[in-house]
Image 1 (cartoon, each protein chain N blue to C red):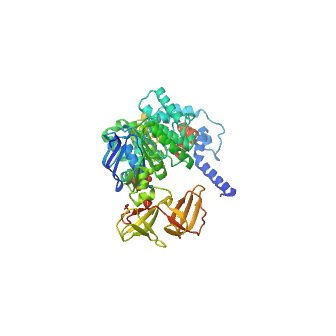
Image 2: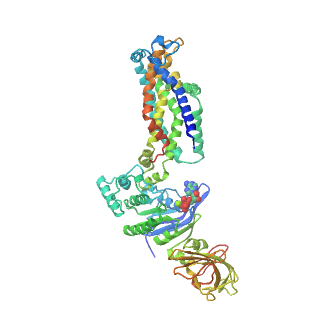
Length: 275
Length: 357
Ligand SMILES: Nc1ncnc2c1ncn2[C@@H]1O[C@H](COP(=O)(O)OP(=O)(O)O)[C@@H](O)[C@H]1O
Ligand SMILES: [Mg+2]
């Protein structure tokens, strides 16, 4: 039993950590709206005195953000489709069969997750260059991000499949279905939430991807918003309001989607497949 | 006797890695038979049933369904229906969709499939539940849906894996009769797995007793009861379980002396090997209590349990011998009593091989 007193301390601590964690986000929004002089004012203001709402359309035009966002969307969508398409079947097999080789495979999958992108990029770059993939840089990035994101997806979706009793599938087999048919008509619908939520998380992750895109995509017209933002920040930058406006445009849709879906995301990842 | 066989197993073996789950299974099931597979938990009943369904691939031997070797035939081409212990209803489908699932796979026209399912639903009392999801049903209703899903298919063979074990006792007794009646009405062949020997005895034409992956004995229910081939079967079939007492046959092999207080001697119905150690099996319902001095086994009552209709008496110092009485008797704990038994009801087993003598 927790005493109310202790409860209040925990709540207070949670709020403090949330404030610390969310402060940069708040600072991004207010800085975007401040005028040039207010940004550097001391002491800093926490609410912009004269919000510059025009900054967003200005940045969108000047930096050609439409193109950047489009490229981010292409990479994120491509990655999500590839990961979900390849990873779902893989997770299912890893969930259904139990033997030593499955454990080896799972270990390797997890090891991939441990290797940092900045380490992987050099061999990937050399390899992609050798097979001519650098001529299709966005596709090359999709492949690289897919490989990076796959373990995360497989671990989540495997757990979802494991929650679907094998007997349901066997009932479908005896009822006259093939293995593939039983998977599609019984297992997949029951695992749907877990698969969808994991795919959305992959999308969000790929939408913000930076390391691979920065190294592989040289052509500005094909770069995603993350690389565009990085290019915006030169060593002598003073346009902090414009940069923050860029960042705001970049992350707000994703943030909004996450907040709107968060209940379903949490439910999809924690509840069993059957309810 | 030539009878058309529905299922035939010749020397079927099943290995899970190093574990030998089914050993040289020999089983012939005639068309229209109701066969019960019975045995303690873990003896391989489900494995055998799942092998017949095609959910497990057998490691050796031959399996035939209606004269066709099905060793490598997938479940969907075997035309068998299965009722699972967990019912395995599709949680994302309504009752009617569960019932018509197999028909839809066979591309039965929608209206016709619905009509068939509704007819079946009516015969098993599900007609008002067709649009519910499985989670909205009680245990008994789910069990019925599982049965209905099998019946809708009109399969060659019904396979049941402990279908009643999740129901309460009174519903279980009721469903027992209903399943058997259904079997008779459909003229189907059924294989029914249970760990409950009473279910097996009351429902089946043919009972197969399994132990540790081996068929210990098979035959008609009363045949198993009257002539158990081994001490295991004798102890498994019948409730309460048969009493086993050590004994030695006498010098001419016509009687046996029990190794309990008073060393009572029981006459045997036929001559057996003389001066031999044996295990004597006495069914509780075959023992009767007679007035002192009139029976063969003199002992003391240590426990009395009465259910009203039936009285269970434990006799001997530790209540080791159980007697079942169907009439009320004026007896109490501590009384000295005499027990008697008809010679024809005495079973003898070899203490080493545990086989019947
Ligand atoms: N997939 C499996 N892998 C390994 N061993 C199994 C498997 N399925 C069953 N067994 C083993 O086979 C034996 C028989 O199991 P089962 O047929 O389920 O017994 P029951 O008679 O209780 O239905 C058990 O000892 C069980 O542990
Ligand atoms: Mg079982």
